[in-house]
Length: 156
Ligand code: ADP
Ligand code: MG
View (cartoon, helix red, strand yellow):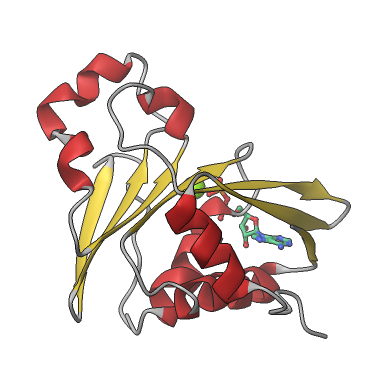
């Protein structure tokens, strides 16, 4: 599926809807150039999960963990990673537990050191706004996209 997202508020709203459809441990890869709206989408996702505090960009820490109800939500931003082997010590492949929801910006920079994606999200510029596309990778991702199915990610 591919959607237009006209402004920042709509990107936050889209992230909130993704969270509302997320009822299982899932790994999301977020692809797209700098400024495409990946962190904004994650902020909306966190808000949709019920997290009210500030979502910091993990550009320097690489990973920011959140405890939200039963969920362990991990927001990663691997922009600064030059060699994926730098991530070995973080044990990221272990993030796939029964309560883990993982959102990774710049996943291509962690290739080989990340759990596999269930859902691949691609963002890019579209005039003043952005577009998002979502693609499932396997059964859990397919179930998620079905839960999202018919949901208008860009109302109004
Ligand atoms: P990324 O994490 O992909 O580098 P950010 O989420 O930090 O991008 O967003 C970069 C800028 O784009 C921010 O100023 C944000 O407000 C803006 N932005 C996010 N989504 C949209 C959108 N759908 N339309 C227009 N601007 C957006
Ligand atoms: Mg970002």
